[in-house]
Figure 1 (cartoon, rainbow, N blue to C red):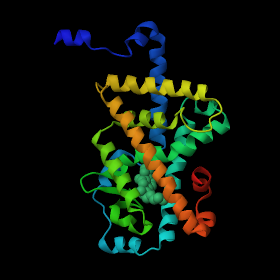
Figure 2 (figure 1 turned 180 degrees about the vertical axis):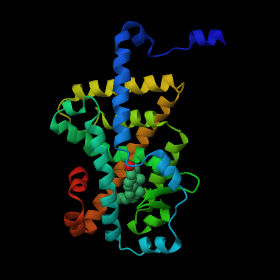
Figure 3 (figure 1 turned 90 degrees about the horizontal axis):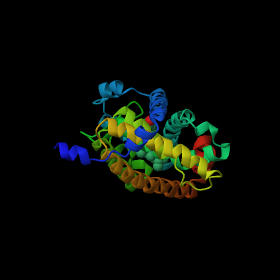
Figure 4 (figure 1 turned 90 degrees about the vertical axis):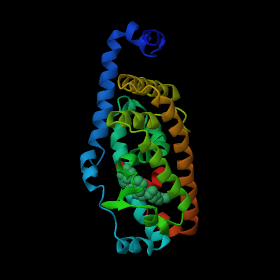
Length: 264
Ligand code: CLR
């Protein structure tokens, strides 16, 4: 067993040995990201835990199901936009984000904010009955029936389920959210090198936290989740294009401006 320990390689050892001063920087970086996550997460875990079994009644579900397609889309777009606003606040306090150009901040949020909302969804998800916190109670997929995009809803619920299974701590979730957002591969970035640098520092932070928590193996799983996120978000964009074609008036005049700005 000692031999095993001797051979186990910690990717951060080099860093610790050669740059002992930067360990403090990593801790500070992690602390600010965790603080930003906490301050923009809308509900504390204890609060959500207490609401866990507050589910919609048959009658309430009926009300959602009898909404028209465009009514329900508009309603969900408003809810999603609120969630995105919190993600924008979260982003602003990631060290290095505000040093990027306005263009690059917007480019990162355009593709990243929806992904972070979906990552955050696992805090609002009850795996025991497959429901998500929506409009003050927990809702199953049937609540979203009138959106007429069952495949997207099923995929989103599936993703939340998979994220919950990883049992991330709030700190791990905070760092993972930041990593998803600061992605140097996003289209139309002006200063990719600078985004790359911020990305690297967040990645070091996440690696550090996972190592400290004795959970190095999670990193690989988290990278796998990022690939799923990308496909979910392109499905969301596809549905949005379909909706805007069928209901141009709702999409144009009733969707929240931020929703249009980010996704249209
Ligand atoms: C995600 C975590 C946020 C709080 C939050 C707000 C709105 C929720 C969202 C969470 C999860 C996904 C959600 C959304 C409202 C509508 C959307 C339930 C819990 C569903 C999947 C419908 C998407 C419909 C689009 C195609 C318009 O901090």
